[in-house]
Amino acid sequence: MTLILENVTKRFGEHTAVDNLSLTIPEKEMFGFLGGNGAGKTTTFRMILGLLDKSEGKISWNNEQINYGKSNLIGYLPEERGLYPKLKVREQIIYLGRLRGMEKAEIVSELEKWLERFKVPEYMDKKVEELSKGNQQKIQFISAVIHKPKLLILDEPFSGLDPVNVEMLKEAVLDVKESGTSIVFSSHQMDHVEEMCEHLCILQKGRPVVQGALREIKRSFGKKNLIVHADESLEFLKAFPGVVNYKKVMDGCKLQIEDEAVSQEIFQALQGKGFIRKFELEEPSLNDIFIEKVGASYE
Ligand SMILES: Nc1ncnc2c1ncn2[C@@H]1O[C@H](COP(=O)(O)OP(=O)(O)OP(=O)(O)O)[C@@H](O)[C@H]1O
View 1 (cartoon, rainbow, N blue to C red):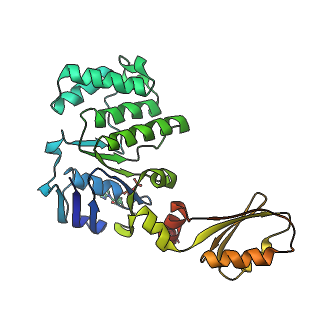
View 2 (cartoon, protein in one colour):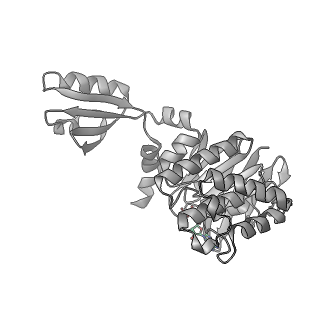
């Protein structure tokens, strides 16, 4: 089931939050949705879910109009987490599972599996308000996937989690994807998107500035990173032709260079200038691409 957005626009009064956005999110894919604060990610999610009317355009899923009435097919982890603090985890998930048409016994058995997996079986009969913020997030995630949705929308799923819990949740998300669910998720942490997504879109002021397959986006960016560690000062590389950016790091520097050929010229220029301990050419990171494409709009 492919999710398609065609020329979707959302205006709040004079302000255009999402501007003529077209996207195709392939079936059974993990799609990364990125953008700075206020870029329009949550607004797009709300429109996909039918929680917010769009001003213009068309959103369809499997050629049908999508809406939250089809909630047994959709899972949503909202940015503003929304659990009932006074309810016990068991009551909470049973309530949400029933709303999605599940039988109570099936809900409890699925919940037990998830709590075991997240290493918190003892939370079954704890009130949500008794759990830490990160652990509430695990429960919120369970509430989004308990009914095995076909489409899962995760708004900042990893924010506020410690590194161990991030890894645990990442694995869970990948398993949900492997079971055949299409997943769209937003994140400000580029490394998560880089690790998990085949396709992505970077929004800036409601418009896509980068869109497509991650591998292709990196290839077409052209610039590469070069890390050099040496005994001698490398300051002279700041002004070296083809060096776009120079950053001092421990023991050396990290350069952004125009293309691979520049690295060879630098290598030659370094001959006879002391011992080179590291000389490593890297693909640009998604963080580099994001900063270049979106960073300018902050100035
Ligand atoms: N209900 C609303 N009424 C008026 N303006 C809104 C409303 N919801 C969102 N906006 C505006 O639309 C723009 C996009 O907001 P949105 O929440 O979609 O951004 P976001 O990309 O999710 O940002 P963040 O990363 O900070 O969560 C912002 O300028 C925001 O102020």
